Length: 413
Ligand SMILES: *[C@@H]1O[C@H](CO)[C@@H](O)[C@H](O)[C@H]1NC(C)=O
Ligand SMILES: *[C@@H]1O[C@H](CO)[C@@H](O)[C@H](O)[C@H]1NC(C)=O
Image: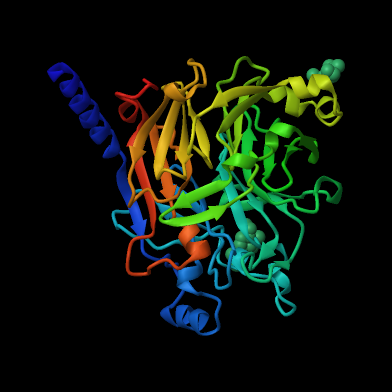
């Protein structure tokens, strides 16, 4: 009995240690931007172009000394939809710099022809091995109010080695957009020495499909599969005392290790309103004729890996080659989970590397920095959507931890 108690105590201690392993890197009550002058800021506040409480960071990526952040136009008053902060900044709440510049982040209007090329509303974001920044622009503003359409959902690619020059803009063709489509995330499949041979997977969260973009041919095709759908019994979520129901399909994807020089690798993925994980070989998606012709062979080339268990709904996931672990958000548990890809996908093999009911409320996005660190962005989004964020408390955070350290004592080790 004593031994049993001791064991339990040890378990609790281990759990405790794990909980504190992510450290807070940045935190904000509200987002502030680098205006050219204080007058410019006051003017933007006066005319409604900047409503601080409406600016919620959704997704991010880390590149050298920059952390890029997207702030979708859920509501009005978004000062800049794509911005960055400096990773080496010592301030707790650094101000955001519009990227590539302020002008590209201004909505077009009749008098403003120069802004016809601007970013409308950035959602998913990814920096690839070739120093290119990819974003999905949904093309709509005021999503939680009366949405206004500026253009079709698009993929924008910027060259980070060339002052953020826009090198590609690709509008998703009409015939690949469904009535309910909403493109929210992008995953880039490339190799450092083969930058022109790049594919991007753009997930359609409400249309339950994936648009594959071939960078070399500058064209795309749509892949449909039942596994891109949500699970009807796992759309009931509870976050920070708010109960809500979502039917979000495919959202998170993680690219595994390269298997050979041809770029073959496994793509892991999951829907948000679900507890299941799936995989498909990237060669399947890259093959236009095969992946766009519904067949039993196509259906069976997708794999069901297993379930994480109750309450384990997840938004983003990322594969860490150093530890062979996939890290994923646990939005319904204010936690970050892990799974070692060498083990069967069962709930017993799922670990919790961090869990905190204050700083990890809605951990929406996560990334690796290339130096073995995991970064997590938590943003309390359900409170923002269904209630009101308290502007006197810290609402948005970027947390970090070393992957080799945070998996210690978990089934992912
Ligand atoms: C802003 O960036 C875009 C894209 O790189 C560029 O075309 C434009 O000239 C820049 N505008 C200003 C005012 O710097
Ligand atoms: C695409 O798939 C088809 C049908 O399985 C196959 O015949 C073809 O060789 C594949 N193409 C490539 C480039 O792999």
